[in-house]
Length: 146
Image (cartoon, rainbow, N blue to C red; front, side, top):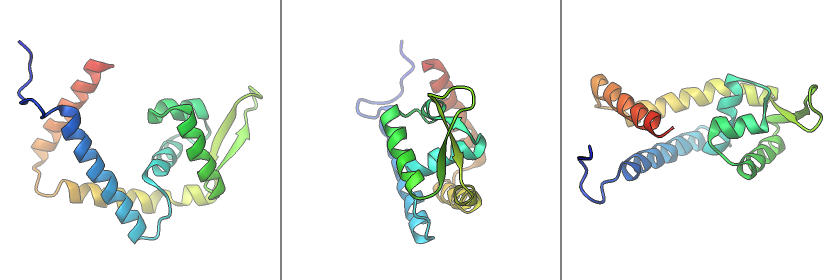
């Protein structure tokens, strides 16, 4: 018997999708209100570069679960804004490494503060035990499917 306690129409993806969309919209709103002129998608690319500067475009695709055309478009816009730069790889001339500029690196603390503020708004009134349970269940669902 399947372990599915949801009635028809209450799919996991629907519920998690709604929560994810609401969180992204609030973060975008918080960025805008604080004069941060980047999209959530651009922020997610910067986030991976803050963790590991100099990733290849392919590594960014894998880390962010995006396809190459999407990453190319995001990087084009980030490069136009002066937040990243593409540098030819020393090991493989066909590959470019993506590096943060000073401006791109400088967005880290303020945007992470806004992301934490947004997450705190989203989790207001939710007990820590429930948050841990939710994280555990979602991690198990992810692990089961990968």
